[in-house]
Length: 497
Image 1 (cartoon, rainbow, N blue to C red):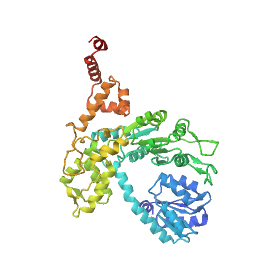
Image 2 (cartoon, rainbow, N blue to C red):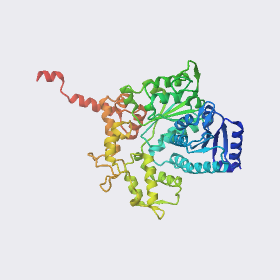
Image 3 (tube, helix red, strand yellow):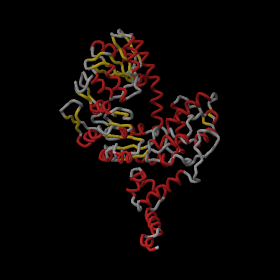
Image 4 (cartoon, rainbow, N blue to C red):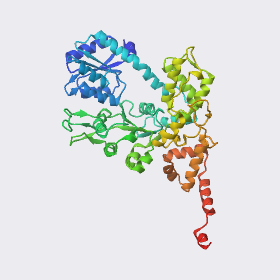
């Protein structure tokens, strides 16, 4: 039975009627599920930190209802299926529940066999997605030097408890890396709470993070614990931390420095002990200069900074990543033909791992003999030239996207397909262009690395790493700068001429 439960998955049952809860939990356990119980919205949020595969909840609960609970669950884990059970079912209510993200809406009395089938199907659909996520960074062994350096940096965090900031373009796997850091860290036995800050309004983010008291604002009919409470003794992962509203940042800083916070509408301070991992694709130094991100918060969250390289800078990992994704997609027998491998390595991959996954899924629909060929590959209709010229400058990053208009290292400029990067006006590779750009920044700042890092919009540690990679000698940058100055006519010469 233990093996069967592990195979079927875990279910969280939220029901305030003890007798009904006992019956539902017993029936689901008899089917082989690992079942956890809760009797209110707050106890459900606490139990949810164990990351169940499926949630079955009553509509009406003592401190709210399932329609209040759904947005909170979606903020933490948008992919977890939620089934709502009620004796007050109406079509209007069912439509509202499904619109807010419920998997299905069941009326009491519930047929346990039907509920069991629903739960099994939901877990079966979700398992490949979970396996796919784990495979992207967890199964394959990196071959590229760039990812090997990332692995070494992550390994230094084993059993550590410091704040970590993950930098990199969207789709590079920062959220998977954050979970990995948690799982090898000092708080691995505690909860891991994942919050995506992108697109959240100030009010919604604040109430979700800190919680609120009854009457704190219109519609606050009951007190609600926030995600900080749920993350206590564990890790709080703020994905896209660069999007946190400027008015919320001081409160977040106080939590990190003093381990204390107040719920909205409450005068009493609460204690909390969390480790923060942040991630962003934005240029935080530019945001600091613009005044949209606090410099003291930056230094608090960036005790250790790790830059996750884009896929086009680790093309040596493309084949093992592809094989790993094919296994996760349920097609391990498929092979990538040599012409398909060549075309994959020629693509610019501005969508990174997400784009790779989409390309493979489309290719699997087209190939019919277990071999993916170049003709089966369909790339996104937006050309890489448009993505390089339009998308990235709107959201500048301190990474290699600054050189996106140049052909990636190892890529071959080609006019055969619209997925290819446009020919560069320079004959240099991406690596050469990056080296030249760094040298120019160092010359402009008289060889001062910290000032050059600010000019380039990248962390100082990252610039040191790039200097070492390119073999740049800082003293030479100073000499070149001095020579260029000596060549200029002095003001006295100008006045005397």
